[in-house]
Length: 250
Image (cartoon, rainbow, N blue to C red; front, top):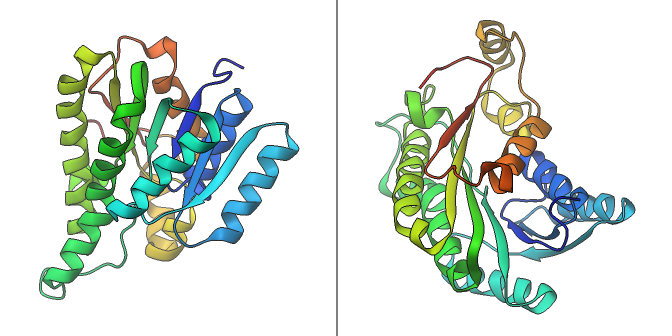
């Protein structure tokens, strides 16, 4: 219960890595605001599992690339748990589709950047008045942000690389206020993301080329995020931490 009575917002917190993060924080005593955009059924299942284990959480639907929705998300947290946010995990995002430069248009480019980059900006800016000294932010970037991504993932990779840079910039800006900002950069993690966007044979080849010879598990990302939020990481800020089984060394 090392996060007892801490208040946490997890964007994209209803499924896959977000689900694992929400559950982990709740098990450690945090009161969790689980944000979801469209999949209420999966988010509700996450909430039920947290409550069954004795944890405290609420659900809130919001498109975090929309400023008005983001304002509602922060207001819901304040209404439920008070005028304080201790932890912010910016996890919401997505690839949308694999498109080459020739195939994509301006609307697609903007949409992917909004999902992965603008969303983190909007949520962090809106939460800032409630982020007191000692609070912590973790952005969820990607291995793609380091290596440019796979075929048709250029804009997704760009958005995640920009998020890594944003992490470093915010670490410098918010550090004097006692707010730490770090990021994790997952590689191949066994989630629905890869069920949709990765071919089975390519996925298997990537896992085989990983020194640990397997995919990662969402829980392994969640515990790493938990470490970065914790007092054990009190002197870490501006870090983009790789979680990829040794597939890529920054």
